[in-house]
Amino acid sequence: AQSVTQPDIHITVSEGASLELRCNYSYGATPYLFWYVQSPGQGLQLLLKYFSGDTLVQGIKGFEAEFKRSQSSFNLRKPSVHWSDAAEYFCAVAYNNDMRFGAGTRLTVKP
Amino acid sequence: NAGVTQTPKFQVLKTGQSMTLQCAQDMNHNSMYWYRQDPGMGLRLIYYSASEGTTDKGEVPNGYNVSRLNKREFSLRLESAAPSQTSVYFCASSAGGEGWSQPQHFGDGTRLSIL
Image (cartoon, rainbow over all chains, first blue to last red; front, side):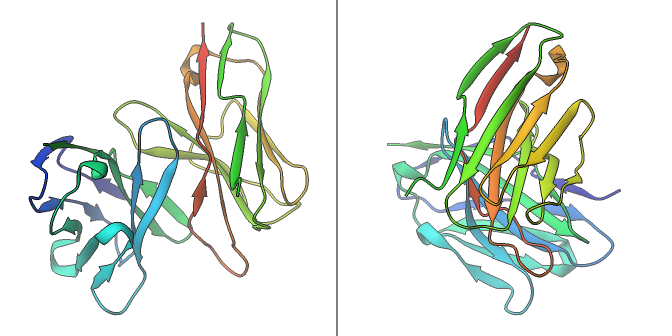
């Protein structure tokens, strides 16, 4: 069965530190890959997406993600976290018009 | 720029009551979606509409109906609410067009409690 796994439920980082959020998927072929962010009380916002081509994808708000086929992963990174990055982050995977979301990783930023 | 507007923002229902969640987008998007979000889970697709006049079931359609009233509006109806439908409901839209497209813009959600 197709699945999307975000291994970390909650991550805490200090402001200015680097960030990496993990996402793994289980699909028979390479799907489309996405990262969304959700601030409290709001809907999701699309950060970036990967369809094909360059495996390092740049997104909004200084985020990037790298697709690694051999690891079935699509991890989200940011070199220096800002307090405003505190939110919940969702990885999503789409294949054959079927899109599934991970359970999310909640990011806390310490001053 | 309103984007995607959902009404109401909060609602409490009794088991067996019915209600309709409203969603409207002002971006002239073709595709619209209804999701539910439950604690510890990602979003799950209830129904989507690839274009005006078409609707299709998603992952969890049971207990729900939808209407794509026109290009702007996509409503979700609970005919007989059950406690298991307590959730946060999100409407989303995307430009769509040819082929599949991911949801791009989300509303702020409707928090629905069923007692």
